[in-house]
Image 1 (tube, rainbow, N blue to C red):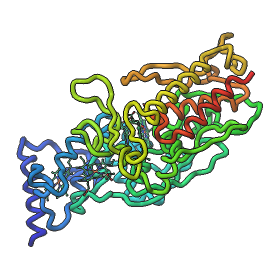
Image 2: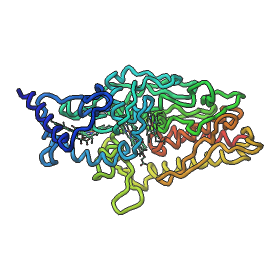
Image 3: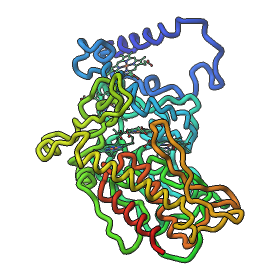
Length: 424
Ligand code: HEC
Ligand code: HEC
Ligand code: HEC
Ligand code: HEC
Ligand code: HEC
């Protein structure tokens, strides 16, 4: 009987919405729609028996358990919602960019996912999701079917692949919440430049050879989503011989479960600006135009709280970040200089072809992309392995923490790349 009442309540709530106007004609899949498609989890996952709606759908003074409203407000400013790329909803993209696509992945079991870099799409999702919604509460949690906010997906160990020829996949052994992030914050399985039969770009390699690298796409990188986790694992860059590559404590701590993404990205919230469900470390305070940072996650007892508190002026913060930003810029400028990289660059229409182009993004940062074109206009570099410096530039730039995720590895990659290009 209780179950029946709960369902009735749910129907009554939905009914209210339906009362607003005359019903439109049935869609192409009939009045009930195709099973489980474009309906949103809220609807097709169902409700737990005896679920008390008012426990969560209530003001904060009633919902003292979960404080759902607070999280909803914080989430409005999260990149997941704010950046708006949830229109990337086809089979190759929806698995990470949409609520619905990730649900399909979890239904099939993310534990069994194996991504093949040369496959046309990778076993991402089986269908397009034309009316997709952004990654949201129901992507990471399953509140209606469970009545709580445990993680929807609790499968451990994500295998991260690398596009560098000699590398093999590396298992990320972080804690449950970090595993959740990395299901999506990993390289794109549909790595375009290696797919197809024509215009295949050079696959980065650590091996010194004499062949020519041809690069046909300005997106010759790990899709912005893979550089972070690869950096945290200390691999995925082109490692020039004769250099040493080391890792910082953050890398170790993430892998031995002492530290999680959430510790820094979801630290004690500052209203709806930073921390908590904004997932932001950097935020713009009220009445300001410059970025502040939420250091609550850094300065906990087990971490920097006891040994040198982190602040905006700390060497471990501004020192590291300015160093990496300067080195990225220095490396990119070498790639614009014909006297430096000219000797390894195949001329285009008789003229020097710089390795990078640059634009300024909304945050005022310079974005360096491979200066690539299709067909005969590919960016061509001989010997090919020197192009590894361009790969590493992309690694360090899209590892958007500017060295905080793994200072030592980012520094090693940048230093080795600069030294490599300075060789005669
Ligand atoms: C454990 C917490 C929890 C309980 C209990 C709960 N909900 Fe929800 N519900 C949520 C969350 C979280 C959302 C998503 C809010 C968001 O996206 O901002 C949601 C969304 C919804 C939506 C969609 C609202 C929209 O704006 O699209 C409906 C409808 C809904 N719930 C109905 C119910 C009904 C009916 C019950 C009781 C049978 C119920 N909920 C019980 C947490 C809960
Ligand atoms: C493995 C999961 C994954 C897949 C698959 C994926 N993306 Fe993404 N994508 C991400 C993540 C995560 C980000 C945000 C990364 C960040 O900002 O650090 C992102 C960022 C983006 C951005 C904004 C940054 C940029 O490069 O301009 C665009 C646009 C984008 N993706 C398009 C696509 C398209 C189109 C597809 C399908 C062809 C796709 N993505 C497939 C995870 C994925
Ligand atoms: C991208 C994944 C993600 C999304 C989307 C997300 N959460 Fe969470 N949520 C988390 C993580 C991770 C934690 C644990 C944070 C920690 O360990 O500090 C959490 C914790 C929570 C908790 C605390 C759980 C408890 O019982 O103590 C609540 C409540 C919650 N989330 C509600 C929401 C609501 C409401 C939304 C939508 C507005 C939402 N979450 C969206 C990842 C997510
Ligand atoms: C279901 C896939 C998915 C999960 C799970 C997920 N993310 Fe994301 N995340 C994305 C995508 C996709 C974007 C880019 C959104 C866009 O461009 O519209 C993104 C964006 C972000 C951004 C903003 C990036 C920017 O460039 O400003 C941060 C920060 C972030 N995620 C952190 C996290 C953390 C921390 C977790 C785990 C608690 C997590 N994400 C879990 C898919 C996911
Ligand atoms: C030691 C703290 C720390 C940990 C752990 C950490 N990050 Fe970050 N992350 C940062 C900082 C600091 C930035 C730069 C923020 C800024 O400039 O606003 C950043 C930037 C990012 C960005 C770029 C978007 C943004 O908000 O600037 C993404 C996406 C991201 N991290 C994802 C992750 C994921 C996924 C994990 C876990 C696998 C993780 N991070 C672990 C500190 C951390």
